[in-house]
Image (cartoon, rainbow, N blue to C red; front, side, top):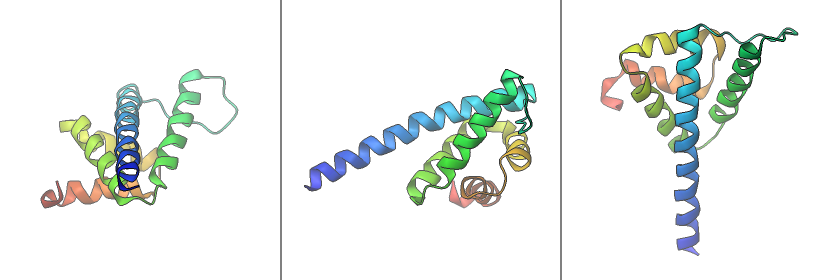
Length: 114
């Protein structure tokens, strides 16, 4: 039974890692192109996609597994590199106050957590 639990945990983290890279790429595209989500009736495909990715960000950040939040925060920080402050500005303005955003801020403001 323990091996099944370990396998499930490993598969979960691989899924999280893949999702994290997709989220990073989407964030990068939105930050670079200044694509803002819009919750009004819009036919602008980029805004609709930004809405969807914002929702994905929100769903992921509601995960109660600290390991998942930590892993995704690390991936976003790694992906953003020197542009982390652009990412943070975008996330603060468009993705609100949530555990993943807070964790990224904690790590950035306390380098010993990296």
